[in-house]
Length: 365
Image (cartoon, rainbow, N blue to C red; front, side, top):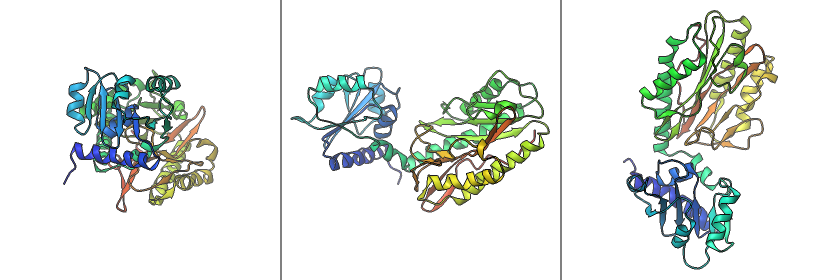
């Protein structure tokens, strides 16, 4: 039976409680947007709500703009009507005595921390490091459902956009069309600024759409994603408009082979650095090693970059229920570039390419 929102958020909150108990932490204060959403279900503007979690209670603090929304979205949490950073109200909800308060030391500013410390009037604080990020790294069924839907939207949207790729069309117009299609298919918006890089601009791994017109004979890279119920998708497809340079065809086929080989090689629990090595060795053997300058992939969820990584120096283990990208690329300055990206996961030993419905053999338009 499908879990209710109450059950999901209680389970996640209890997992953080277990961490806190192990570290002798009496209460945890959470203020980061992704942390608040993951634990409570609150989908308001990041920074406009915070949480206090104790052994026996769970509170959400937000102001009058969001109190109705918080009551509807966060049934497990007790609402306290207050600003998200009204530490005097948070102090009132702390356990009696001088409790040890855990806080997101990797997420808040020094000023935020000192104000909290001054208001609470004691020094019993403990940074929780990556505790919430570690919980978020392993996706539950509801999260996988939302990411899968975000991927389906992205795949359908790029298919709808392909007919608009014509000589003389501006990169920005193509990005606008793609983002419009994502919203038409049910996304709340793009999960990050859409990349459209044609011709020599293809050598820019993060080349945001510009006023450049695409031209016949060029390769065109689209890196994009949709946002669905707070969760991201991320994928990249590279197309050829007219007959491409033979060298670009070789580069495309090299990237495609490296990407598909890496996906096939993935096994749950393997180090991210090992998976990176699979793709990187193919690109190096083809003579393009120095033109692949980034890691093979990154985790995706509530944030477009989160959790695990797959790079040469990655210490991550690619365990089951992580969702991550596999995106090798080759980028040659003043010539062009190619990247191909899919999201993958594995549940109960079954590996799934979440963006598989979008073809990735070289498409010449």
